[in-house]
Amino acid sequence: MNEQLHVHSAECRYSCNIHKGEHPYSCEVCNRAFSNKSHLIRHQCLHSGKQPNVCEVCNKTFSLQSSLMRHRNIHSGERPYICEVCNKAFSRQSHLITHQHIHSGERPYTCDVCSKAFSDKSSLIKHERIHRGEYPYTCDICNKAFRNKSHLIRHQRIHSGERPHTCDVCNKAFIQQSSLTIHQRIHSGERPYTCELCSKAFRRQSHLITHQRVHSGERPHACYVCNKAFSDKSHLIRHQHTHSGERPHTCDVCNKAFSQQSSLTSHQRIHTGERPYTCEVCNKAFIRQSHLISHQHIHSSERPYTCDVCNKAFRHKSSLIKHQRIHSGEYRYTCGVCNKAFSDKSHLIIHERIHTGERPHTCDVCNQAFSQQSSLTIHQRIHTGERPYTCEVCNKAFIRQSHLLTHQRVHSGERPYTCEVCNKAFSRQSHLITHQRIHSGERPYTCDVCNKAFSYKSHLIRHQRIHSDD
Image (cartoon, rainbow, N blue to C red; front, side, top):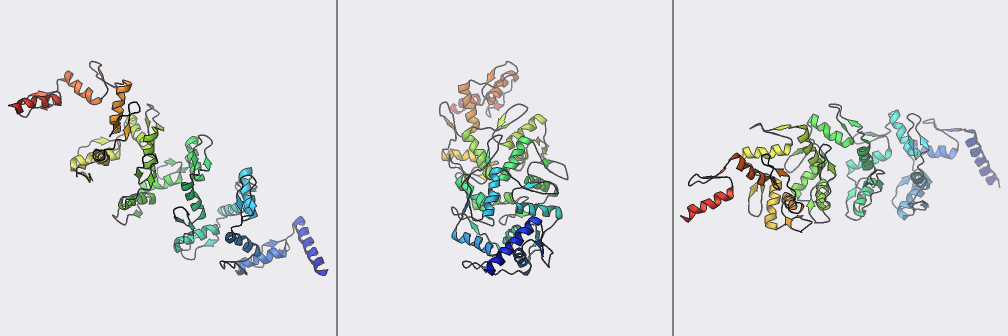
């Protein structure tokens, strides 16, 4: 009876302290005060490092009995707290409460310095360390300091090499659970973050935020050297290497250096032959995801990038940027041999091979060499018989896209090339050039036997038969 009275009395004191706002129990180490003595005892375990509660499965220790009970749910798989809106289950009630703020939009915890609001108290506490400049968690290997304990634990895996979170589909391992969750969306196809303006969906919330700047025009990340602004911080970091010339990422096979880790990763696939991005329509594989996305426009006929001067549309943003230099008259890249200028750096590199005679791209079937990779790719279709460009009207297939475009004019009747002298129109530019020789009198094809000249190559070939018959 006396024990029941003692418990009841303690509960009354605790309840009174809450209403009065009293905190009579103070920590002798840090002076933090508590309304309940048990809370003080629990807090003191932080300073003493005492963790008397041991998990009988994995021997992990905890300062609080409640923490041990929550931890046991990991082994049992028990998730007793279920969201009534989306049926998502949680091992902790606090996690459920925090999750429910997603549905309600509630952000009850507000920073008294900058008024930023948060859905959970722990996020507010972590945020407030930004204003105080507080970094309470330090790595004992490299002394790097962190605001959040979880960031320290994650960082320490860099030193240990630990990757505890493994994908059950492809066995790829990750340092963070969040990275695994995002990765698994590749397999599931889940894209939970949707743009309210254009309905485009994304795997990561950060990608949605960056995308929304396309609509808002916001560019919050500015270069301190040239003031160029970017919508994405990673683009700014990449741009700053332009000024510093820094290339910290080196290929261990050929020693080529790169300013970005992602560029090195893509480059290394040249050595390994890995092509992880495959087209679902034609099974063609690519080294880079961006190359796959660009390729898929061939099947969809989508041209999402439009010039605001002439309304010409392009499949690739890079093609639009190069095209716009036609209107601006910008020719930034000049040949050091003949001073010919180009709007695109790749065009200059290809041009310079005229002077050097370099043909670095060789066909593995007939050993014919080419100055451009694209020329080799087109040439290889002769051996494979591949004709990827098909006319939608008559189903005739072509090796080159340009051949398809020219062919389609047979059906449309389009003749975009007009003679300035007589206004005669042609479906091909080559036909116009040949026609203009009538007006200019030019005869570029000369017989090496009798020196007779012709306007057309076909006329020269026909003429040469006279000599061969003789």
